[in-house]
Image (cartoon, rainbow, N blue to C red):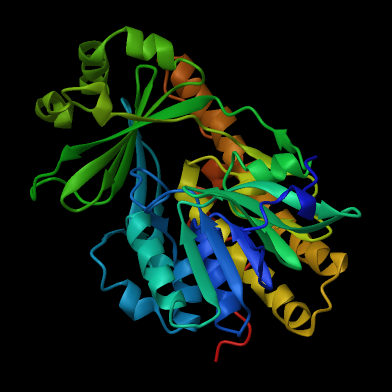
Length: 415
């Protein structure tokens, strides 16, 4: 562990002091910063990039998140940003439909999934956060080291274009993603799982005559997802874990041929792929920390639990982490009485929804995704899934778990 002492710092670089310092301005970091600042807590959010413009990040906003935004009186403004919606989710094989999930029967004001570019969501949320004098966002500032004194994390050392800086805070939050440097510094090591796939992302044009909704096709050892983004299709092409070099080595024409075989309705549009630069690889990771905190440090979002892209739940779980964290942290941060048991309470509330979600994702990966990638035979759904789709009392359970989550989360002190 790196220990930073005052005498190591350039005297011209004055340390900063805030009540909370957050590393990473993704969904978890931005939401936590917003929620703390609106309660009068001074918070500094460090973001290593110059902007939020990174494609094919988590763009799936579920009703659980929209409910949180309504509690913050922001949902109507958020939904004014251009977006697309999906009221159903369908999976097909070469033999016909495998299963479908209908969000339209959910008992919510928003019985659908919203697809909204993550950069628009983060820009909106940080713009709203700037209304509060205690919110500070520093771009191009990479959090790299924790500051530790007597076994307590006291702050973060970060790097900008003009050198190293330090910020001291009673609480530092690692929301810096699945490759969190702060998590590694604190020796909080995740338990790794074994997802069977990686995902290639790209986009193709969409005609107004195309069907709506979100579709996945499993055929001949291939899996392709078509996500309706209104003006274009966002395409997810699953490949066996670790096969990137083999796929790339086969050339772009071979990839397009494979795509045409599994999604013939888009055959004429795969020629829009001209270079590999149009294709982005998501190396899928699934893991979670056994312990999310140390004295003075808390991990949330992907830094605490990297999720599979199945169900598009990652961004929504991260936002729920931030809400629960804010609910628990506001009073102790205001009173200057933050203790380890406050951090433990956050993990205790968020751990079992995380475990349940990852368990369900793992079941789908092992019983559907892996067989679909390894065999040309259509996979067979697990018996409980087949039964639930036929029973009126259970058929909406998958939609509920995806869109509303295993445990509802609400913002305290909404006014």
